[in-house]
Image: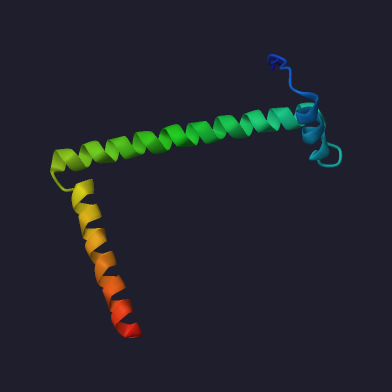
Length: 93
């Protein structure tokens, strides 16, 4: 497989020093940068997939009419919280 290069970037000397200070033994700056890029790409792919699954789930729930609105859920949670606080207050009295 033929390799390719990524564009070089200019950074402040302080950032380069900080990066160099966290390199593990035997790790080069290039290896660190490549690993950081791979990790960032993977995180973004996972985030995109997560959002796509969420949107698909929302569409399926809306289609089936089998879902609870956010307003209803928040109202229910507020009611539960109020009851729990009242119970704690009553127990302390």
